[in-house]
Amino acid sequence: MNIMLFLISTLFGHFVGGSIYDFKIKALNSEEVIDFSSFRGKKILLVNVASRCGYTKQYEALQQLYEQYQTQLVIVGFPCNQFLFQESGSESEIALFCKKNYGVTFPMTTKIKVKGASKHPIYKWLTSRELNGENNYKISWNFNKFLIDEEGKLLAHFASSVKPYDDKILQHLD
Image 1 (spheres, one colour):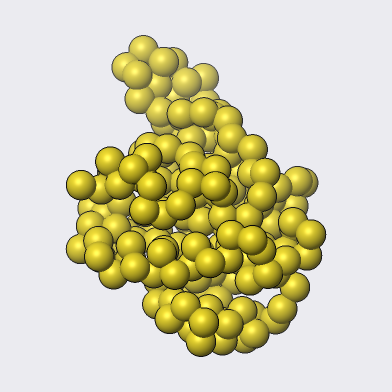
Image 2 (cartoon, rainbow, N blue to C red; image 1 turned 30 degrees about the vertical axis):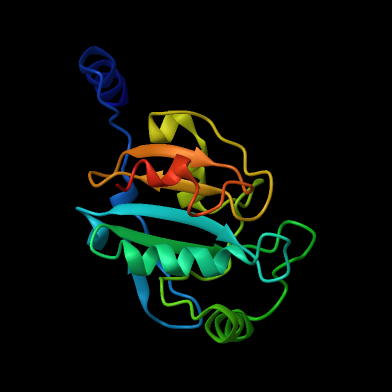
């Protein structure tokens, strides 16, 4: 069966290997579940985040972007403690920090791993061409960004240094 799916995807130029919409993940500091299938029809910006990072101030622009484009864009933050332990707080501490300092209202997930053997399945999908059908990516630091189109296709990856209002991101939104 897998060989047939591979042949179909190769012949017709479509990736057949799962979708961003197949993922569900526990929300930060909550029993709620974030179901990515509920984001169909909107672009999704996925960002691995941390509270004690030089890029942490991007939370403010991410929140502004979320508010400005809320009819067409969902931003999802993924707290991660893999880069110099810059997200070492508990889930309640992370949630409080984001709300108090940046007014974050966009969805945030439970703390996950974005690299290595214990990488969360959604980041396996995001970083593997074999799974996402586009390219291989390496998460080098906090605040890497992945943009998904309205139909669940991976559009682009942006390094930490690319700010939320950078033209590289905005060109996909306007």
